[in-house]
Amino acid sequence: MLLRSLLVRGLTVEEKSPFYALKNVSFQIHEGETVGVIGRNGAGKSTLLSLVAGLSYPDEGSVTVEGRVAALLELGSGFHGDLTGRENVFLNASLLGLSRERTRQKYDEIVEFSGVSDFIDEPLRTYSSGMIMRLAFSVAIHVDPAFLIVDEVLAVGDSAFQAKCSEKIMQFKHAGRGLLIVSHAGKTIQQLCDRAIWLDHGRLIMDGPTEEVVTAYGQAPEHVPVPQHG
Figure 1 (cartoon, rainbow, N blue to C red):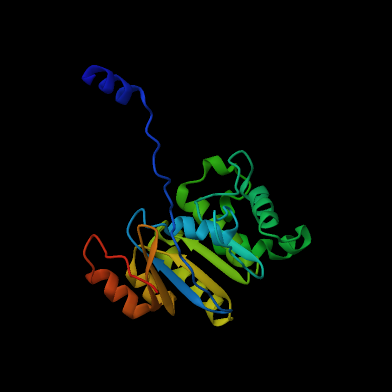
Figure 2: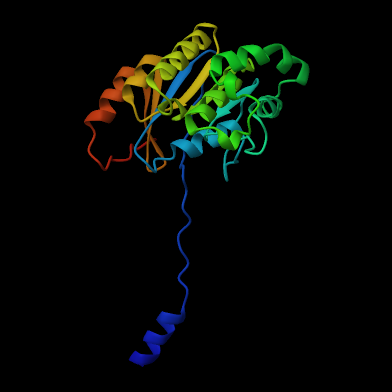
């Protein structure tokens, strides 16, 4: 009986419990609000941004977004390595909902801000990761989105360009546009966001004024108790 039990146990494939990147996460972002998302690796931050950007869909519940959304979720996403920088500007802008004519009007502005004008007619595969990031950010910020989603992309590139990006985002913010940004740097969140959301293991731990959330996150132990609602 013992041998039989061991064989059955060894040959039986155990069903794994489903993994949910996010669980019962609910919040609203109002027009013109700038919100930061913080949490350790695996907290569900990138999944959250993908849902808001419409790149994935929830198993339960719904996500509602109004207005044009520009998302910088992965370095060079929406770009093609065999196309030139110029061709990728038009390709990426069209994916973000900008007409070809409007892209022509914005083109010089986009290239100037990116700082890659000397290489704009070279294939993208010859660009460094920093150059790709600059071009991607420049396209996204110039397509006049009502809402901008950024996932750690500002961590790439030199300090001068990071400062340039932060300044552009502040202009974006002062123009009354919405922003949802993920960053491991609490300082970045504090500088750019009025409000912060703290995720841990797919659950919403805290949602409130940036200073309060960032401080609580910095003081928290590695394993955070899940808040009980209801």
